[in-house]
Length: 196
Image (cartoon, rainbow, N blue to C red; front, side):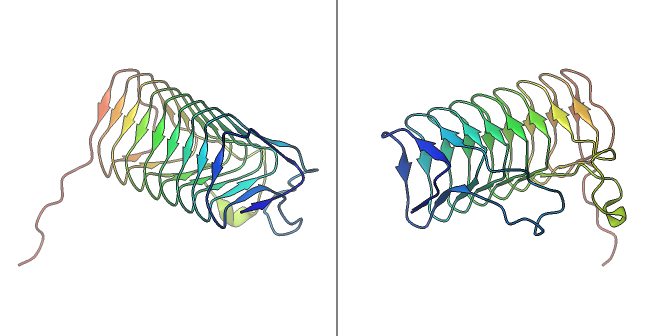
């Protein structure tokens, strides 16, 4: 376990081997300027898995499970009792609500907001920049917003700027490129045989 000086940790926190807490990003290595290091605050009874990296300036609630290999970038906020399974990436300034589960291998893009009591299946991908070839431009960033009590199936993709209303359900493998109203269901097209 590696602790950096800008981390405030409760004694009840469990930190597994090779985890890093309060990591300060290297200037010039990120697409945008990360700003001066801020304190990382982690609530009581949180578990941090092996090889997890929690950057400086994060706010993590109480009773959170952070799985092995999870990366939480600077300025991110994780609510109480959230569950981040193995190899999840939570990019800069993303917000995840209380009691939300993010499945193995998900990518939560920078600035994204996810409400309370949501479930993301394994491998959900999100994006916030419709044309990254132009270089980082904060004025062009449009992160997805997910309401409360939303279910998103494995392998779904949320494209920049989409808004998903409370209680909506997104089927496995769906590509969401427009807003989804509250309580609506969006399903992917089933695979079909195209050859022998």
